[in-house]
Length: 140
Image (cartoon, rainbow, N blue to C red; front, side, top):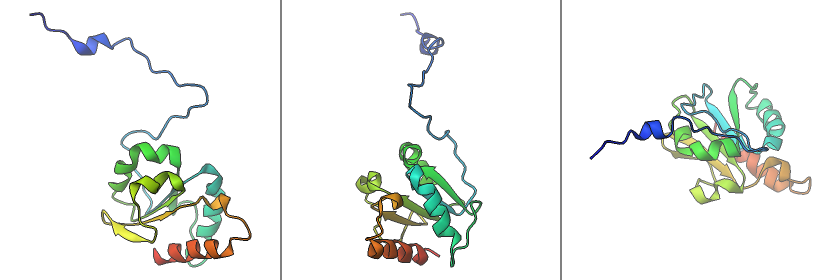
């Protein structure tokens, strides 16, 4: 029986990006900060402002922000990042992963899942905002 070289069958295949689709994070991702925040792009500015305030006083060099669609396909790889010690996941997309609703240790990292996006919170939800803030402070 003749051997088939399967690799040669695919040598001319090309991968096309569909309009509006963004590439996800490259394999072999390396995060060099101790904090990782994952959420909607709309949350990036608010998170930067929150983490710039005391007691954190972080600049954007102190944490890495990934968009949800980038993080979901590589979730297991994120947990293996050696330098990352604190992970915050924002939004309903992570509900199925059974992440802790309060900061807790998982795979040697402090992980917190906040079920909402920061940008979805209204001025009337001061208690919810305060709860998020207090949970973040527990991670210090």
